[in-house]
Amino acid sequence: MLEGESMHQVSTKTEEETIKLASRLALLLKPGDVITLEGNLGTGKTLFTKGIASGLGINEMITSPTFTIVKEYEGDLPLFHMDVYRLEHSDEDIGFAEYFFGNGVTVVEWAKFIEDYLPSDRLNIEIEYINETSRLIVFKPSGKRYEDIIKELLN
Image 1: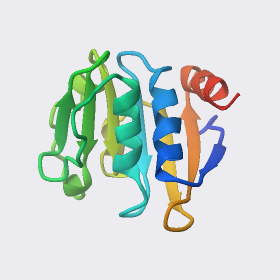
Image 2: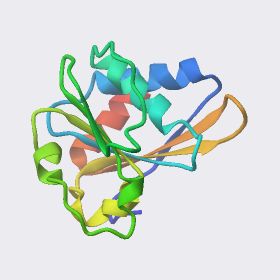
Image 3: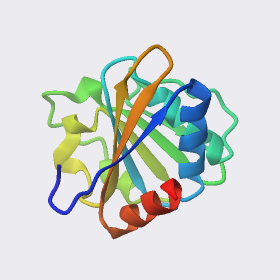
Image 4: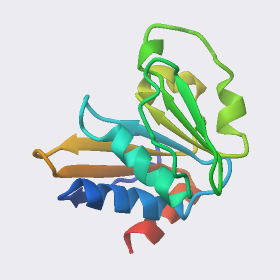
């Protein structure tokens, strides 16, 4: 955990609950917000991103950008969905700052592989598999803005 980072957790019992939680989170986001998603394969990172997209008014099909690294979607706010798994052991900067400090919301799957490029203030989310439909979602906000977002989301 980063210095000054706190932790909050929520369990969801269905995919619909996970999507609803992510959609509610999206309503609290603004341009330049960065969300990182960590979790093993199949835990629901892309599903969570679908919920964020829904909350941002994006009606397109959301799929993992595994082979393209970044997918961009237009909604109430632009959504930049990154899957940086393929950048492990790479020093390649694909213009991260343009996304992280741009006019949309950036969601990064496998963010640990680009840690050096990430802004220090961000919302880190870990998704853990409980069973076929249930997940433990751990919010680790870094920075006051993200602390405030999580307080509002979970109250």
